[in-house]
Image (tube, rainbow, N blue to C red; front, side):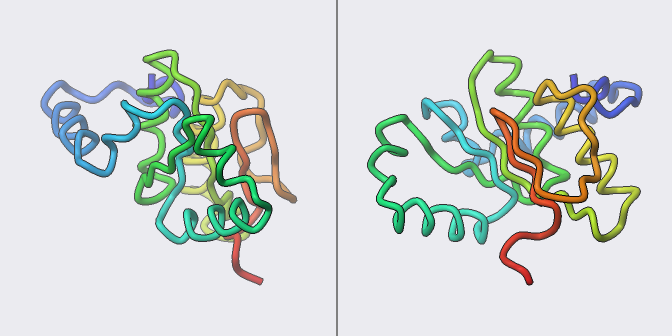
Length: 146
């Protein structure tokens, strides 16, 4: 699924098993046990988003819906937990920086993969402004930065 989204050949079984072992770490456990995972790149993303949710008095609603933040340790690692959700037919929401203002080649690859896994086959991987969809938000550049 990830190979198809990235337009590359699938990994051999030994490489795939190493990747699966990385995914099955404690930080990813909530992916399997919460009703609505929100995939984010890092801890600072949780700080920004949870602060907003608290300040707008929506935290109880977020928790009632089964919302839980799952840290993916960077956009490059986001495709694996996203593919797991898709494979399990589980809903999730994805929040990531498009980083459209820097290192275009790697960002284009990673953004395109995430967009495809979210069902946006014709999505533009490098946007000129923040892109919102029903299952993701791709910030134009690193959010929290001027």
